Length: 232
Image (cartoon, rainbow, N blue to C red; front, side):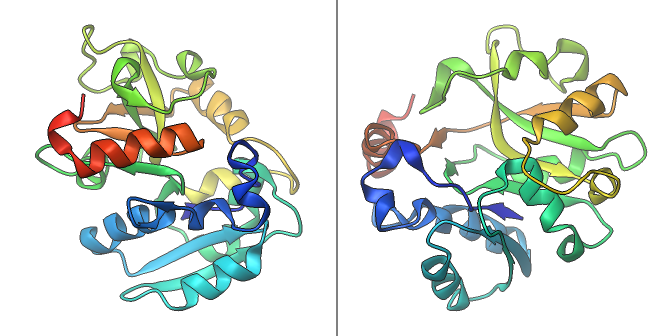
């Protein structure tokens, strides 16, 4: 699932007329970076939630090559948790990749999606979240990431890379959504519950990571993507 229903308020006035996932970054819509990664991994079916300027996103995704796109429509943005819950009938009964549409990443060695799949343990996990060294994260907003990322729930914790931030890429099992009420809420509520039950785990990313949430962030990402040697 690619989460794409937000207002993109930090990118106003661009997002007054273009939905945030369609804002171009280095020559292509930012959502296309996630879709490209999913195609390359071998995913054939993707759920995308839409709300703000949804007609543009629906029209764009209707022409995506190599993917079957299922649209989860929200009358108003339901935030990350509410969007996942609304899409539950489309998610099936197996673990699902969940990716924010404003995240761009490059891999060093084994890809992030491959590594997430390899570390996933269906018996003991409800969430496996990719994390990134905060010092190497471009465009990260302040948040509560430290509440979820612990030494004892992180594979391959590296003290020199800490603190980490949540990278907006991960795996979840749809079972965690079954008894959740409908409506608007952040996925962090589900993360807190999974953490209390020791069912939330983290995996450090190997590669570069960008969040393209502001015009300034987009410019930095474009510069780094078009000049890979300048990546931190």
